[in-house]
Image (cartoon, rainbow, N blue to C red; front, side, top):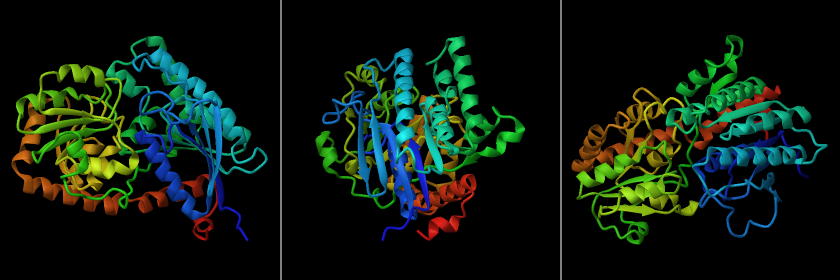
Length: 424
């Protein structure tokens, strides 16, 4: 006889497996851990579209697709993507249309007459905050708002938004979304400070820190001489890799400059995004740089193992509003990180605490190349940092450790004791 679930959740997120977006990996992993505790989850997300910014083959032809799972259900709705990734207006229209369709679907997720105990919504896009609140209001469930990047701060810092009217509107939407949430989950102390500063003192306690986690069973250290190296025509030379979204906030011009000055090292920019075409133009004539495509998720461990050193970069001012989740995956793969990010923010602190890499100031080519040179010239130091990083993620950001934080949070917002989950 099937037992009743300890809790039912509706999860609103922009990406979910098999979509390849980093935030999709995050929410897929969170759901996978929560359902182990007899929690029924109904996910409302987009049809897979992240890889090429268009709906993937096999998923087209319908605005909404629903599927049952062993732990609940997944409803996938049209994301309304546009080919022009640099058009903020076009992207905003797409986000709004997706959020409306997702909100309507959330009203029916799991059955409109069945009790929902909480709604978890993920940002970006920021519009999912009020979508989740509205769905929760009609289904009498509190909202937990999960913030991966603080918007609009990141867009303002990169110059993606400059219109004063749009900035004012976005900030008001942000503030309203925080006020409507029972709890706001952020990834670091920096993000917590940022969000709390936008709330009245009486509401600041609703902002809590829960880091993303990494599946240390799926991502493990492997031999550096992988099949992926062969596919990119790379030999046994040292490899420096950036793997992830190739956007304008990542300051990846640093890798182009480093490749020019370090001809005995092969540099790989692996992924896709709005800045990739421009970077490929800048790299013309540089023989020691390769551009790779997103790979299926089951190859992630192999892709990460293909590099001797990984880089995590953000433009100046973004370290306090964004925590690249790729950092945890790299450390899990047993590879050292060189981070060109604002000092005294989360990623440099992680590397210092774990011993898993080096940091340099953002947008500082000389310092960045100097840090890379230290690890290239001392492979034993690089290997030792990789080992230390792996040990740190196993003990600090494993799936089990972070899942317990979510259980405690859900217990708080629903007034249900943690023991009710553990019995499941």
